[in-house]
Image (cartoon, rainbow, N blue to C red; front, side):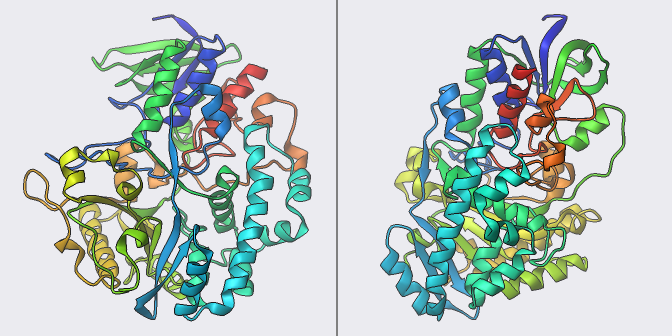
Length: 517
């Protein structure tokens, strides 16, 4: 090993690997240190169930924000597949019918609006889709350049969107749509990993909504062929091929930053303590963890979700007999996510209780990409289901992590069963030890598994993807949204200004900032 590197990257998640790949290809000496015995962070594929030939995207599971530029610039051999079905939502008042939004068949979507009694919202839905498409077209292209200024974005998106983005999202939803079901479908984009009410005055829900509707310039959420592990493997291969040195089982213990560089104190897999000098350090870890490494104590953020991975012998039958389960689960399947149901669940969780009827959304990876299953499982009709539960803040799991996890799972499965024609457990496969193929992760579990502070999937609350006009500055780290209080230490993870989701934008931005310096 060298005594000194141009760059030391702390954390081998997809953003850290992205930064390492760009910088090594530019001729910089790069050392990447990852505490776990594998790379990828939350962007991994695991054989979750013992004795079962299935590699599930255990944590992150869909791709929306990854720019084409990153794939092209790094030559990544990734294939992302678009889902034809946008969503299916059983009616909260009568699950024997539901709203199926089929991007490939507008006439079928119109009939579905009529079937759930929301025909008068169809025109508003189509107009809103055109509005969000225009918003995505204006904002997403800015993600691969230096941070735009607020005035620049305001001019690009127009006064109407600028005004709507800066008022609680509930006002826009209630003004635009009349049906509770349709309002709920729209609001869910604002609540993924975000614990908020539709009328939250901090607008954290608005920022979450923005990131979820601008991806790829279209707002589509794509399936990575081979699972999320294919993303991190492609990035790791590219970084290594360019000359980056990558060490796993390498835990960083502390950072000492000076005007001349940064000393990185770390321990290898033999427990040997080392000190490596870096001209710069890129922190792929969370801002909370970075502060700890610098010897500071800051309050952790709070994540809010329940992740359940499942393997089924077959897809369950629906109470809505007019919809094929293969269509319903191919897109986003909304479970008890009506507008009032979301509000009720938030109130219950805010009061300290697991929601009585937890809202959740599900999709089936294997309907789009069966390659994550072994040949025998594919031939026998097995499928994966990924469930993401909303309004499950970490505070609900702190006192009794195991008991609260069991209670949250039971309530969530009961919520799902309410819209199915048969209990989900009747469709579950068993692992090699005869146990149901259910993998449940709470925010507390995510904190322990992949070092997400408070289980927050975005490392901290999302920020607007632009800079205040009086804060843009000329320093490259500030221009690219990756600055910290230490000039030699930059963020390259989800906690950067344009972080969150599987995007590689923070990793690329940190690399661009260093290459400009």
